[in-house]
Length: 254
Image (cartoon, rainbow, N blue to C red; front, side, top):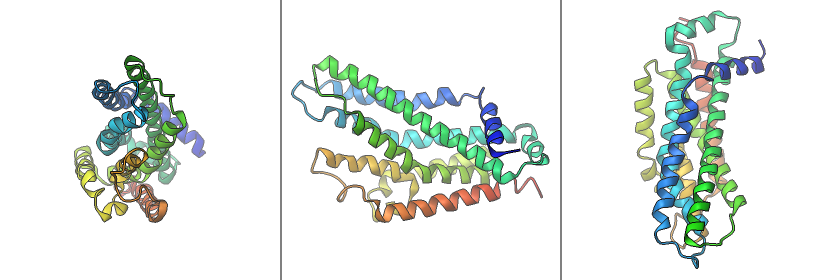
């Protein structure tokens, strides 16, 4: 069985799950509340309205709601095999468990991408309603929004990979959810220390915090620096991915 066939099967497995409605919840909540709060004091003379709305919406989303939703999706994807000894049936087939874990991880990344698309779409729609209601004529900065949404997606990769590795390592969903949430919660605190570079759970939030430099002199350092972030993020991503694919199904094969 080729990897593409295996990937197609994994998408069929989650087709009837509740993941699709889940990826709408966090963007709708955070964007609606963020735009509603800003709507009260915007004026037609206000500048950088879109940047302000983005940061208002994306700060809580990137630090907490997006990671929390991905933790739940990790468990839901893994649960498709753990229920009714499905993992034993899969491992009995002539399919590499490495390829099976990698296929599931690709499904996880797909839903991360889809949630970013939903966040962008909801933000644009809510932002257009807010700006039109206050008479703001500022042009929609689509490239600005795309840049930061792509940044959120890329900076979430090490974190999501770590979440998936933890989900694979623990049999009990409650343990993996609890540990991942425990690691997410201090993210905003770690982001304000030099240790943020080695803490993937705060990467996306730190990126949004750095966007404050676009229109204010108050911010963190000198903005988001690719070095030494990029080498560190790649090492974390590769290590967590290696753990996930090598430990997947290991306990069941004993």
